[in-house]
Length: 279
Image 1 (cartoon, helix red, strand yellow):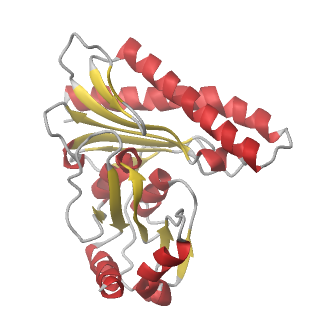
Image 2 (tube, rainbow, N blue to C red):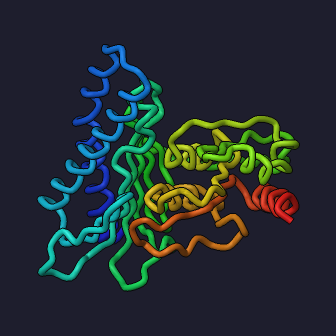
Image 3 (cartoon, rainbow, N blue to C red):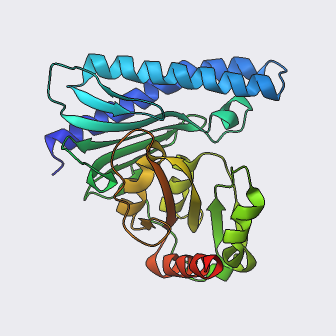
């Protein structure tokens, strides 16, 4: 039976992300009717992300007990006079450049841990990721499996990297250097995907649409890892780039390197190839 804490926060996360969706999606639709250049796209993405953050914060102030809210740039205690009940990771508009360009792969993500000093990603108990373009909702509650639109999901059982399709985050100033680190994987993998919304891409691993997702840039904010619990509860595996559990502190501006895979055998193979290339 799901605890009261987990049940409450599953509901609040769903409601918050739906409210953000209802707020920014009409604005994205208006943007699509305009002809704008890259500079405008970038600025619009930033403005919509700020709006999404404001919507989330306002709603949680109204509906939740005191929490520590963690986003890309800030860490806020919503009520200074009360001890926090929970720590909430939120990426209110992930894949914003996809959104303002009309690419239907963007959304929002939230994950919740009970408040305690020195909480880490290992302490997450509830996770919700919503694709704003499709209204698909991924959810996970610790010990209760992972769902897509209330239907249970499972990751890929593919163990051969030669038959695997793998997602990668390649947004770096020096792409050639990153490709060098991933050379062992790239030489063997069947195909690669780069979709531009890491929280949803990890969910694609959770439901078996892709076999693994790699982000070893060291540039990813911890808020992108709200989907960690989803891939784990689905039956997949996610670790840092050395194969260790993700025990990153739940703090703003923490950066993470990670690999998510459908199964342990494929995961070990990917880690081995990256290690050999790096040596």
